[in-house]
Length: 117
Length: 113
Image 1 (cartoon, rainbow over the protein chains, first blue to last red):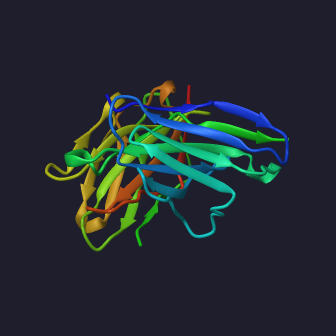
Image 2: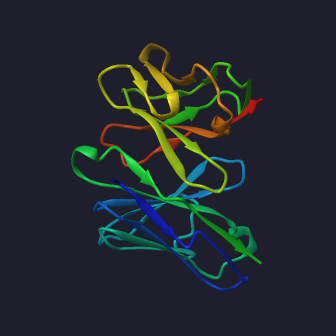
């Protein structure tokens, strides 16, 4: 149990276009979802935290107008990279946390590789 | 704020040798502690976690870690390295009731045949 999926697993887009990445919790309801960004050979950087039905909370330095996060249901959160540029190329990973006695644990998706040309 | 330090960004061991990956954290209260493994172009897989109780935690693939409060450490070990253990390893910390993971910078493990 506790499987998180991401779609797509990789995407190539042209500079100036927008890209949407989906994160789904397949077998549990996620009260909170997190979005991370990972540069090559580096650790994960938390971008934002989203709770279902609420506005996402962005980390300092993350442009909320560029990285739009929607947590429309307890099983789906989306990250939209608007007007993407080559410097947005990165590996994006989501994680989901369920409530109750398991609230301390996050379950990670497989990641989405974004390349902006 | 929490911080997590992983000493050694690259560790190389021979196949069959002991694996020791170090993790120290800063926290005024005992946190929840995690080790994750990441293979190239993949997400994170949980190896093991410490929440409460026994301080020696056993995880998957023969890994274990010991929570030492006095040393604020949570080092990861495996008695005998396999080639398949070559990957990136991340230590992470979360406070009780917290809403964030704090990740270490990662340690790349190379296993030499």
